[in-house]
Image (cartoon, rainbow, N blue to C red):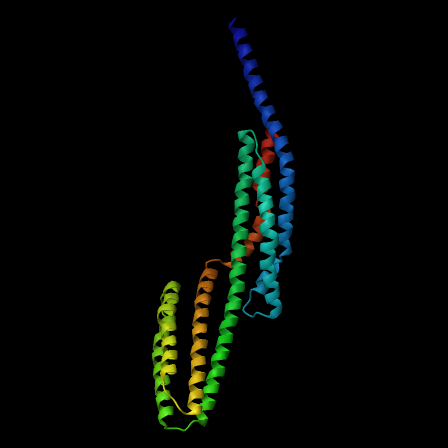
Length: 294
């Protein structure tokens, strides 16, 4: 009787194990069928990343920026926003729609989901870097343009100064005021080369430099002058101050952009391009291992 009891118990346990095994095997088959749509969307995403030509990106991100480089860099930024990010969204939707039944298959699928999050992080960092880099180019071009305007107005000021009557009351009054303004400004701008943080320097531009330049404009406008050439000197100087205001406003943007770029080392991002393509190897190993056990 006791032997019969053990035989029945063994049969029951065997039936339960077989049943569990069949359930996992069935779930794997169902899971692989669901993943076909996911893998189709993934291939599209990988192809779009390949199309960016990131293997040659280091050539585009050099110090010298040509018009051709700017077009290519802008295209990469646009393609990320208009193609890759929408495709990533479609891909993620397919991944999250997959719902395995058994714990064993869920554990394998969770590996894939974690890999998806790494892919999302890679694309997010690449997107952020390209936006910042293109913004940096644009900001530096504006700074250069404001510098040219400054030099142009400075040259115009000198032109009027040569025509003005030296040692006249108007000339002396304006020259003294402008020289005093220049001395104060030279002293104030030295803070921008200090060890202060980017946020502190930005605040300094807003709270000290720009108000100082605007006050200088007001002082010049309030100065009574009669000489035509000295008035011309004043006008050119005021335009110089306005170009400096725009220059320092853009310096604020450039400071922040450069600071953010330094937090995103591009070489690490580009190296991750290769890693992203092979990231699912462990997932497929885990799936194949589970399938082999059934």
